Length: 135
Image: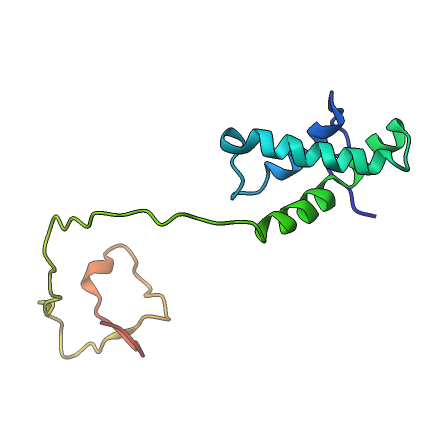
């Protein structure tokens, strides 16, 4: 059995549905509160056609997440987005990667990057190698 938030007692039955829908990142309550409450009202009316008000409250509370997911999936088929004109502004030019300047002792070969060195107090003195893909 799926459970929603369960313990939260909402004042209006529609609030269970709206609260579940607000958990989706792509739904803005501030912009679409009227639509959300309209959809929630339709949902509540549907359940009240065959359930009492108390039974409707239990269903909405216990299956809040499932109901919100179901409504959200229906909303996705009606989703549209207007293209916005963006002005491209380049503040700095492209900087090409340059060769790094470093020195190391020929007596000490590069340390494999997968193996931690014993002395970690000055990591800058090590030259690491063993890379398969890198710049």
